[in-house]
Image 1 (tube, helix red, strand yellow):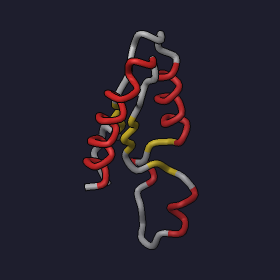
Image 2 (tube, rainbow, N blue to C red):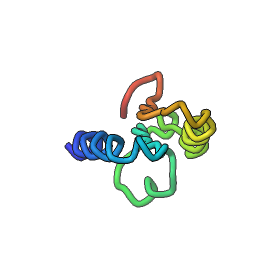
Image 3 (spheres, one colour):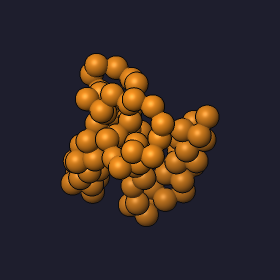
Length: 83
């Protein structure tokens, strides 16, 4: 539900700021192998998680597009499936 709310909010903001040349990007990542998982009980399959570097590369890709190109949403998943 929170991702749906974020998407709706982002669409509204995009329309408000588009004429000023401002781009709004949502990145929807799958589970990402960060230190936060050490504090969560359970045996989480780290091999199915994305790396933080992959998140950064996705953001860098979107931000490096020419100013007339708007990358609005990026969804990143592991090809082996969700956790």
